[in-house]
Image 1 (tube, one colour):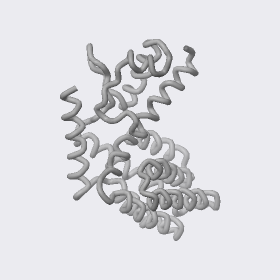
Image 2 (spheres, helix red, strand yellow):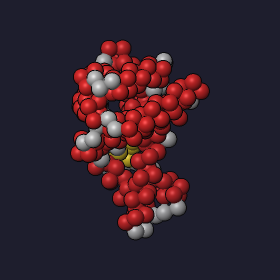
Image 3 (cartoon, helix red, strand yellow):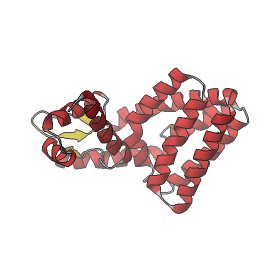
Length: 223
């Protein structure tokens, strides 16, 4: 398998982690993965090493790798940084919004709304990712967009986990509407504040999120 094929395999595993097909704490058996993808164990091992370097997989000596489930404190710290990056994107987007950026925001916002109305968590998650990427692009700052995208991808499995909390999807969409309204109005500080609050894990969300991660870690410990 060449470099391109290795990259494809890595991308497929990364996508399965991000979409929840492979969940935090789940074992990643090299033999089983090799059989599923129709490859030898070598490219699987190489892909897992790359994913471990990105923080998505935890390699354990003499045992199967597992999808990463960092401790709650570490995750909260990462979400705090993500909140500030997204706030910066929102601030820039509010002052630099172009017609194509506004169209992308409207289209992804509408798609999220349809998924919410259908009660489809998977589709909501998919369009939610597109919505946030549209904000990054609308910022007009490519370096900022790149950095936000990197951390966004790193936190994808855990952002998805939040949507399992009761009524979180509906609250998320309401927050999306307020974010777009602020960006469209050119309210830079309002957009930044709304995005920061949208991403940061605090209050009741903190308790729910920590409980979810602790359950994952307990399951992993029994594996």
